[in-house]
Image (cartoon, rainbow, N blue to C red; front, side, top):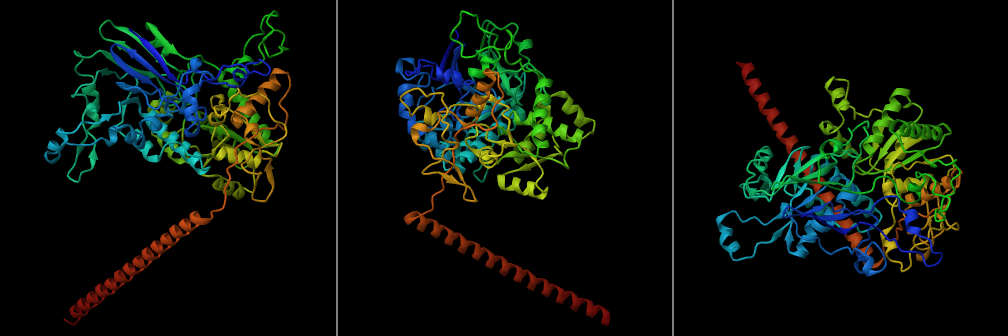
Amino acid sequence: MLRVTPIYGSSLATTKNSKDGTDDPLEWISSPTPSCTLVEYAGMKLLLNAGWDETLPLDGNSNKIREGGIQGNKPEEATAIPDDLPDVDAVLITDSTLSSLGGLPLYFGASKNKKRGRSPRSLSALHSNNKQSNEFDGQKKKKRNPPFLATYPTVKMGQMTMYDQHASLSLDGTNPGYTLEDVDAVFSNRSFCTLKYSQTVYFPLGDDDAFAEEDEKDEDGDEIMRMRKQQSSKINSKTSDKLLAITPHLSGHVVGGCYWVLKQLSDDTEVILAPTYHHAKEKHLAGSTLHKFGVNADALMTMPGGPRGLLGKLYQPPPPKTDTTSSIIHYNKGKSILSPPVGSRSEAEMIESVMAALRRDGNVLLPVDASGRVLELLLVLDRHWERQRLGGAYNLCWVGPMASNTIEFARSQLEWMAEPLGAQFDSQRGHPYSLKSVRICSSVAELESVIEASNGNPTAVLASGASLDHGPARDLLLKWGDNPDNLVLITDSTRCVPRGNVWFSREDPPSNKIDSRANLIASDEGETDEDGKLLGAALSSPEISSYTTASQLLYQWCAAKAAGEEMADVVNVDAYVPHRAPLAGAELKEFLAEEEAERRERKAEAEKKAMLQEIELARGQLRLGDDDAVGGGAASK
C-alpha cells in the first residue's frame, strides 16, 4: 500500500481577502513553498525532503503557525508545521536548494536533537570499549537520526547553501534558527549516505550495511569513517530479507539533482518521487532521465511544473469570453502574453538585456542562489565575455560569502555534469569552470575594490541572496537602486516568495497593493547610507509588505506585462535595511572587555613570537661560531 502524507508546505494561504473578495495570495505566489512529505510504502516510512526558506517563519510566530498552519487561517484548512518530524527509516533529499533541505539543520541539527533526546548520527554516543560497555548496558540507548540519502553534489552544494543562508541572515542580526554546529552535524559523512545515479540501496537496513554500522574510534578517541569503498558492495549484497529498493536518477535543474524510484521487491511495483525535474539540456547539465526510467512506473508523485500566480497566467491562453474571473486583459490577439521559454532564446534575451544596460553605463544586478542555478548563469555569461572579449570594458563578478568554496566543489564534479564539459577537460582545452572572465568576491567591499581598480567600468554582478531581502544582492540593490540606468534581472522566480514572519503575524490575508509612499523600509525612523542620504521612509509594521523584495519586483513586472506595457523605470518596493544601534551599558562594557582580552592575547602572542625569533637567532650564531672553529682548526693543520 502507498500512502502519501504532506507534513508541511503542500500549499500556502488560499483564503479570500475579506475586503474586495479577490484571491490575492494566488496572484503573488509564483512558486511552490518548501515542503516535507511522508511516504509510506512497502512497510517503510520515508521523508521526501525537509525544505525551509523565508516563506516559513521562525520562533516568534511558531505558535500561530501551529494553530493556523500554512494553507489557511483556519485550523481545519491548515497543515500545521510540527515541532518535530515523524520517525522514519530514511530521509530522501532531491537537490541542494533551500526548498529541499533548508529544514535539515532545524529538525536534525546537533542542538535541536539535544532537546529532543535524539543525537545526530555524526555525534552519536559511542560505547565500543569495554570500560563503557557496562555503564551503557544499564542505560536506554538514544534514538538516532535516520540516514539521509542524496547524491554527493547535493551534499556538498547543500552545505554551501546552508552556510550562505546562515551568513546572510546572521550579518543582518537575524537568528537563522540553527547554528553552524547544526549544519556540520547534519552534513557530516555519518549523516548522509551518498549515492551515484542508478545505484540502488535496499531497505530495511541491516547490521551488515556500511552506513548502518557504528562509528569506530582510533587510539586518540577521534571518530573515523569506515572505508567508503566498501559501501557499494555491502548495500547491494544481500536482498533476501529486504522489502524496498531505492534508486536515484538524474532529474536536471541543479547539479546532483535527482528523482527517486521506489521498487517494492515483493511484487516489483514502482513508485517515482519526482518533485522537480527538467527535461531540457543545458550548458552544464544533461536533461532528466524521467522519460527513460519512469515509463513503467505504477505511480508518479510530482508537483505542478512552471510558474504560478500572475506570472503563470501570462503563459496561459486567453480564457473563454464567458470567464469574468481572469485578472488579465488579453490584448495579444488570442495568444498567450508570454511564449513558453526556450533555452537558446532565453539565454539570448538575458544577454541582450545585460549588454543593453552595460552599454548605457549602468550596472546589472542578478540575484542568484548560493550553489544551484548560479552555475549555469556563470557558464553562459563567462563564455559570452570570452567570445566577445568584454573583459577590458565591462566587469563580470560573482559575490557571495561561499562563492570561492562553491566554485572549487563545482570544478571537482564534472562527472555529474553534461558530457561536453567533461570532454572539454579531457581534451586539455582547459577546465570549463576556470571562469577566466569572472571575478569572485566574498563581500560587497571586495567588489567595490574590483570596480575601483577598473576605473569604474560598468559591472554585471551575480550576487547571493535571490530573495533580495538579505545578503550581497540586497546590499547592492540599496546601493544601485536609485539609478534608472541600472538593471535588476531576476532569473529565478522560485525565490520570489512571501515573508513568512510578516505573512503569519497578520490576522487578515495580505493585500496585493504596493505602498507608493515609500521606497524602502527600515527599523526605527529610517536608515541612511555612508553619505548620510536617507534610503527611504521607515514603514510601520502594518505597512510592511508580506512579500520579499524580489517578489514585489516580479509582481510589478507581471502587472505591466498583463496591461500590455513596459515596466516603469522607477517602481516603489520595500526592502529590509538592517539597523545597527550603538552599544551601551552592560553590552558596551562586555564588548570592551572582550576587545581588551583579545588585545592582550595578541600582545602575548607577539611577544612570544619575538622571543622565539631571538632564540633561533642566538642558536644560529652559536652554530656559526662552531663551524668557524672547526674550519679554523682544519686550516692550521
